[in-house]
Length: 401
Image 1 (tube, rainbow, N blue to C red):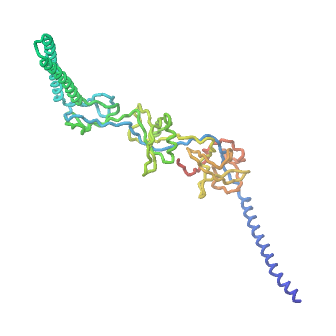
Image 2: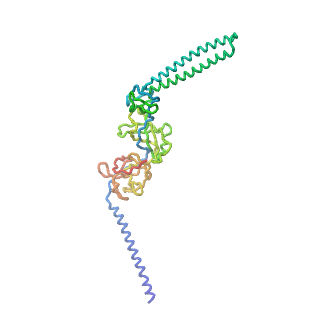
Image 3: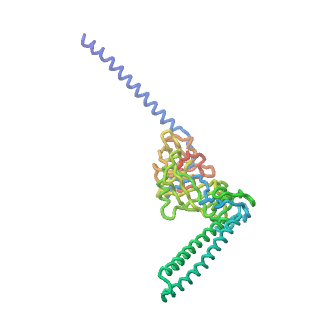
């Protein structure tokens, strides 16, 4: 009797374990079936799609720049005097060598006259000394004078010849001083405001008379992030990469060439200064004005391109919804570059159907149906390759170069 009692007593826990296990399995199966049924019973979501394309994708660096003249010259007098006359107007375009100001130069003119007179006097003395030297040589040949007398005559000729050279230098110096009274334009450009007028006293190398700014050609200076420095240096090779510039009003566009990349990165901003040169015959680009600059640094070959509107920025990174067998599927992607409405990405295959409209109502595994332009629904697989991305109404976060 005792062994049977023990066997029956030990069998009770095993029976309870079997019952509990069966209950748990039934509960788990019920949850799985419920989730599957929930997805199966979800309504079909109407969407718009576009196929991922493969093409060369230009990497275009964009920045806001400042129009900067190649050179600006402050015109100052080289002598202290009084303004006699102003020969141009404020804001006038002048050519190199055009007369701008005339100063009072009566003293300098007198100095030139004096130097010329001294030169004439010494020339006459030299002529007389040379005649005496020739006569002394004749007398020396007849033994009428000594060798010392001949040497003295020769010394007089040599001294006067040296005086002539000094007189000529004095004349040139006087003429240079006189030329300072006639102030000409050092370069072609647009004249700024005139700071002095007729009768004003000006000081040598101190008083600024006017500034002349070169307008054609002209440069636009802008800054690029340090990460784009290799691309900028590559674009600088040869004659320089083409650069597009647009004024804020957007009405006028200019085409120039990359000319300069600075030799150091700014520690404060982490950017490098870059300049592009533009022709400006009409003077449309004005110094210190702002302009939008675009530089095509390189091209991503055979990139997979989708609309930016299809990209979803989630906590785990960028992703898109694709359509596989009539159902929504999540695909993580990596954005290589964005330009305009398009984005070059990795993680997709050419021809994948990417959802651009209606993705806010999607979950993985939900059945989807393509929305036609007239409002009817159709199969997503009927979407033609290369469909326009303009149907997307929601945009992804902007990714700057």
